[in-house]
Length: 326
Length: 243
Image (tube, one colour):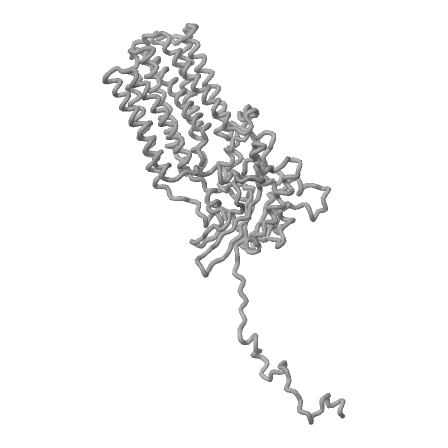
């Protein structure tokens, strides 16, 4: 498939935004349960939610560049019963709205206690919004992943690993970003996020590595023989029917040399996983906040390369029909 | 339930591209708007078509065959492009099984084209919406046309009658008979899309002439041979005349 920059930006920015929210609420939940002391800076949760909404908004804006008719985008919520894309279109604004309200509850201080658990623990509005946001964040991850994983003849994508990668890579970048934000706004908390960021980045590397290994072993199901219904083992295309370009020749092939695609694979393995883990570990060792800022910038660049490779790697069976010009 | 479809006889197709041009002509002139070509007279030109005819060479020289392969939307009975559409612009008609795009609802997200294993859908660069073969839905139900012309433009144009059109759910139809009796097959059956369009395979046409057909074994007196010329002295007409 041809990687579209709108979709690369959409998926990486959404993933980071969702992950940042999950990181923020994880910390709050730990504090509520008394595992951790509450954040030293009261504004941290609100600021993190604001950054999360900004990332989600940027992703949403990027998605419009993918559409031929962006003015009709509102129609895309119609078929949520059958289409994962439609479900994503509903889940994204629902999640953005929840994160917005969550952030407002923290920033404005309008955070009434709604209930008390039997143990005496107060459940305030931000906790309820946080739980709702967590459910919606995972719903959105699953929707995004399933958009690709549900296409069964794009076999590189048709795997539970695709959904797992979207979740783990998004959450990993979100925790790295939370660590970088905390280093600026609430330095005592940075270590908590940094530890999780290393664990989740390594988990994401394992999951992405597993899908790389799986995809390298795939054998094509469709061949020129099944595409044409001719059993002979030797078939050569003489003409694809036109010498001009067409949608079919543009949309379904990355158009790059295989050596470049392989380079991008090693590039993203280094930038999305290896370098961020080392930089976050450097922060844990030295306390440098610049290391965390570098880590999130490098990881986001790496994840964009990862997403480019994700699209380039997928081999659409329609390409069987377009192997020779004339 | 009706399922209209094309049955394409690969044994008869000569790759003349008449179906391609007639399809383009009909569908670029219709009420649904043009099928535009981008930069039609420049170097990097491109165009939107519903139908393409490709050519393949099967086998190793000298035992090769040329296969002309018309390719358009197969109007699958279980179309993977329909459920993925977020707006409902892509739909399959209940009354005749044609898979269509509602051009007023399409947002041009291209997801349906990703979901089609055959590459049957093409984005219209100028309308910025997805387009595909309509099986000439504006011809085949047009009661203003004579019944013999209520067929897709490609079927009307085919000079060798390689394209048959009809209801594959009606066992008595011409297309059902062709699929049944001439080995009609679907493309990429492995994905379970159940394409409505079928293809008839190429067949070897061999004429075998045995010696006894050149010289009849059941005619030992050779009575049908040319008779020897009579000698000069012999009567030239029948006995009855000379008598």
